[in-house]
Amino acid sequence: MTPRIWNFPTFPIAKQLFHVPGAANEGGFTSGGARIMSPEPGGFSMLEIQPSLQVTEWDFPLSSWLMSKTNGQVLRVRLAPTPQVASARSAGVPWGAEGVYPESPWSNMQNWSGDVTAVFAADALEGSNIVRIGMGGLGELLRHGHVIGAGDVTYKVDDIEYVGTTAIVTVIPPIRKAIKAADPAFFRPWFLGTISNGADFRTTYDAENNGNIQIGKIILNEVIMP
Amino acid sequence: MSDFYDVVDEYLGDDDALSDIRVVVRKCWFYDFTDYPVRLWDGQGKLFTTDGEEWLGSIGPDGINLHKTPALQDGRDGTSATYSMTLNLYDVPGTSARELYEELKTDQWRVSGRTLTVMLVVFKEGEALRPETPITFFKELTMLPPKFSETQDRDDAGRFVKRYSVTVPCKDGNIGRSNVPNGTYADTIQKQRARELGVTLDRGCEFLALLANRTFQIP
Image (cartoon, rainbow over all chains, first blue to last red):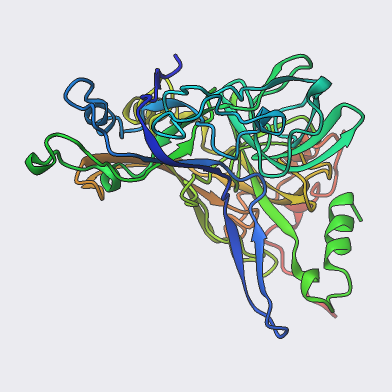
């Protein structure tokens, strides 16, 4: 039996970051004075989300719902279009219209016209860290620091090289699920995670805020589904 | 030298530069339980080695290794240390920690007397969880009957949590060396012993009975 996957609520958010901290073993100060750290092979990924002030709690108390999903429930998050998401920005502004509020409606995707999808050009085995993506007519859109997705897993572009229209991408963390050629490569991926700081982001509803609530930064740890 | 030590040597270099001391080597643990071999490694994520095996990483996102293992000592001094390998049990998809704990209890007969093989894996720079260098043998231990433990305490968020863990004590090849060998020299016994080892006839003890209780004077 696989655990149930919940969709992360689509409420307005203020900040978001996908990163792959992994871990490292510290070495000592050597005679040369360098601080040596050995990075963990593989590592894992995290997603940090800072929701903005929730003004629709009376109708949709999603913050209330989320604050009880901290006991290891698996949440599926669609990454909001931050600069980590490769968009067709070079070909135009991803936000289609001017004068909308908020200016970057990261949660409701209003006027977002930057979604791009490519396909993987070759198989990649679980545990390896190099994928090939056929970029077709997209050009050299993907850069270091962008994210790509395969299935429900998000990867960070650690290194990238273009050979013709194929992008050879080194990703972190390593491939969690085998990738087949012609699988879609999402540039605005999905992330599976569990909330790791349930006690920290929890906030109470206050009478003086009239039911508006500002919950703290949510940190999600990567989940590897069987 | 095997490929493993070649890679380690290459990374160690001449030991004269700061970067020479960076070699990422981790232990892999192969618990050969009866019918249920288990492979763990000290890292995050699933490791795939060149022999086609999959090893489950036991380090969680907080950097804590759920598989607690003591440092292994050199056995050449003839001592036989007891190593206690502990695994904290957590809820896994489809099975709660408690169910897992109870199931493991009923399966504990699979443990005693089986071997635990420790291997070493080396990661080259930029290599993910599919290292191309074959893993190498490090140590072999024999498992003793396991121990089970369950406790209840409060975590940081104020919740009561039950914690389950299983410990497998292990001994290295020096176990039992100080015991008196369980045998007597006699003609029949020696011949039987030899037969078991594939020697048809061992007459080495044929005259033992005649020589028993006799006094010899060395001139």
